[in-house]
Length: 126
Image (cartoon, rainbow, N blue to C red; front, top):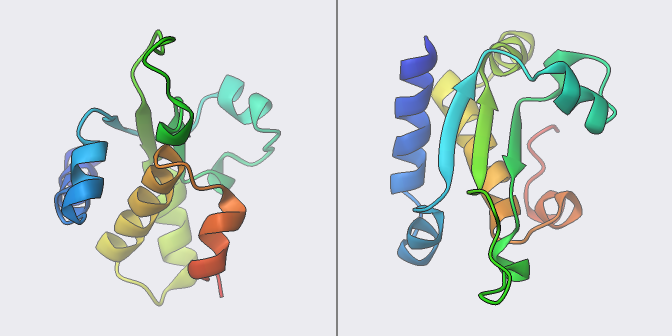
């Protein structure tokens, strides 16, 4: 799958969100990059670029304020090569399902969920 295919799968996942979430996701920019850049890895204290499959950048909806709007749009970035590496390593999941999983995880951050919150209902890595 090339970047355009990844983007199509991710957009289909967003369109499948239940209505309140789909509406809340409408203003988030969605990008597909090959790998995370060095600055992102450094900021997140990640050594191996294959360890980061996606990233939400922005202010979660639970923290937004009309009095103090964000100076930049919220964004979800999917990292194609790390997702492909996880898919190959796992060998037991459909690639579209894995892309969808990463999309849902990153948009959960947009909706105000922490990694710990997500882990209580999503045991994907098991």
